[in-house]
Image (cartoon, rainbow, N blue to C red; front, side):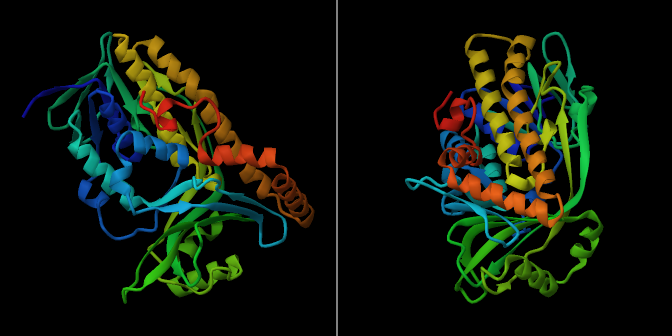
Length: 410
């Protein structure tokens, strides 16, 4: 066993964001070591656990550019439309894809995990290690020692290790955070009527009720089943009760919230309940360190942008590091990382602030507040310029895009 492993980049965390970063760097000739504590077998379990992610069209172009899309072929469901409403009352916004270009593609998280795991395993420039490590910066690079005695050396480290990032904490980077006093119930089910690729965001006083289209699958008798994922925000006081509901009661309550527009619901998946909160790091860089994904920011799931925000981090950081390497620069030098800081700090904060504002706006109770919201939704729906702005955000195409998000290599 080699005691010392050298790479261009040390990545702490092998989830979707960390693994995508490793692949993006590998596609451009930079080597990476991914250190992750998770058991790969548990991550690759074949059963649907209820979790799914909407990959925005810009993020999917990066998947195209780094060769990941081919591994996901036929496993996703194109989002052809998004419908936003305040409850089930009149007054809504309808976003529709144009020219055959979907707003995004829904994947079950297990499909993403399998594709990323296989791609990382075959990437010649990526080494995957199981364990934990805290990088120690020095004048010429970072070093991280694993429990098995191996040491990883690299010019720069990247924290992709989640909301409670031990790497970020060890670096002493402050974080602003608060709780929403809501929890998200996440799962999925089959339904009688087709969803036609439409995602629904229905706002109730307790929080948004989101339905996300999944690809049809074969039921127990081999017949195609229409399926959707659900992200149901509830008051934190009701979270335990929702977690304990049997499938029959859960589906009945979900059907009532939907007004029955997808018909009879069945085949509920396992459900998970997550407390909701907001956090944002004061900086996305430190001493020979960059933060990506949930290590840098955590937002309300109201617009389904959490993972896409992390993928924007990946695209920007890849461009910064690849261009730095081409110029022969030290990848962990302050001048290199400061470019990433300038690029991502404002964009990520703006999206985080927008989702926080929406969560608070739609949480205001009362008939008068609801009437104002519905009037606003109808107004936006009637003004093409405003709709285009919201569409660009939904697709991940707003702002100064890294080249990978346009589908072009760096």
